[in-house]
Image (cartoon, rainbow, N blue to C red; front, side):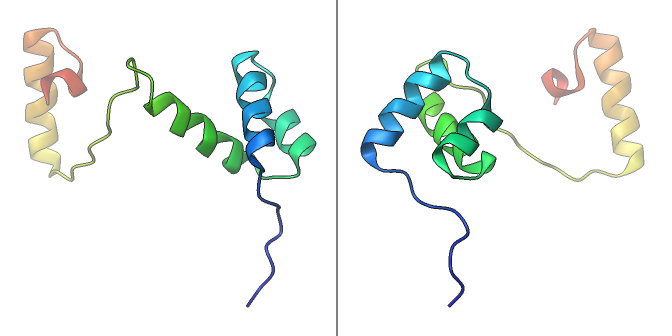
Length: 87
């Protein structure tokens, strides 16, 4: 079994990380400081953000034909909405 390249964060480190993220410390700097990947920092930030009432919206990915995309864009222009709002 391959060894992990990065370490896990302790609970104390997670609490400190949360404070530093709130203070807008750059993610790259935090990843170096804690010896983890940038992705780990983003994962923790996203988990905390999801617990907040103003959490970001969910993403839905759908494949459509070129013809359907043209119809969607035409409808969006007609309604003066974005493509996402129209969908």
